[in-house]
Image 1 (cartoon, rainbow, N blue to C red):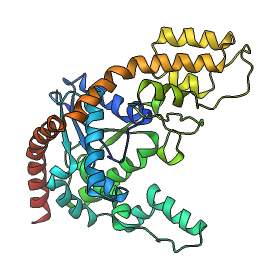
Image 2 (image 1 turned 180 degrees about the vertical axis):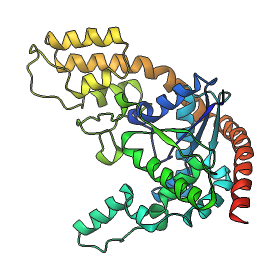
Image 3 (image 1 turned 60 degrees about the vertical axis):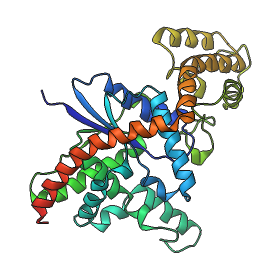
Image 4 (image 1 turned 135 degrees about the vertical axis):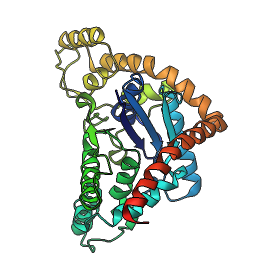
Length: 331
C-alpha cells in the first residue's frame, strides 16, 4: 500500500508555547509513530518568517529554537524528513510558477491580508498601508511548500485551514491548465486540540499576550499558571469543567486522571489548588522535553547536521517534482 504523504511546518518567530506544541507539533509527531502508513515531511518555514522577523540574527536564533523544540518534543529525524524551507530552492521556483495560475482575487480573500486591510481601514489609512508582497503572496509560498511534495494531509489548527483551502484551489487551477500533475492536499485538524485556550480564556496567541511558553523553568511555569483567569467561585464551591484550567489539564492528563480532576472540581477544590494540580501535571510532561531542549540549544551543530541531512532527502523529491512541472509548462 502506498504511504500517505504528511507535511507540516512552523514559522520560527520566537519562543514556542503550549499552543504550538498541542496544536501542531504533538499531532504531527503522532503521525511518525505509524510510519508504515505515513511518510512525513516537517520543516522550518524560515522564509515565511520574513514577514515578521526583521534581522538575520533573530531569524537564525528563532530557527534554532523551533528546530530544537520539535526535536525535544520527540521528533525522530530517522522517521521523518526534517529540513529548513530555505534549503530547498526548488520550492521557490515552484512558487514563481504558481503565481502565474493564482487569481489576485484569491489572495484578496486571505485572512492575514484582510486583517491588515481591516485594521488600516479602522485607522483611516490606505487599505494596503504596510502591506508587502511577502504578506500578500504568503499563501502561494505555503502552497508551494505543500504541493512540491505531493502532500496528502497537512496537520493544521482550525485557524490555518484556509491556507490549505487556498493550496487546493491553486493546485486545481494548475491542473486545469496543465493536467493532473499536482496532488490536491487535505487539512488534518485534530478537533479536540483545534483551539488551545490561553491565560485569559481566549485562544492562546502571542498577539494576545496570553501564552504559556513551552520550556519555562519550573518556578516560572508555576507563576504563569497562577495567572490563569478564573471566575469568582468560593474555595469550597463546586466548579464545572467550562474553564481554562480544566481545558488545559485534559490535554496533558490520562482519562483516569481527568476523571479524578473533574471530581475534585465538583467537590469544591479551590482555584489555587486546581492551578497547583495543573502545574504538577504539565511539569511532569514538560520536564523531560525541557532538558532535551536545553541540550539542543547548547549544541546547535547537532541541529544543523540533522536539518542538513533532511534537506538532502527533501531535495531529491523536490528536484524530481520540479522536473515534471518544468516539462509540462514547457520550460
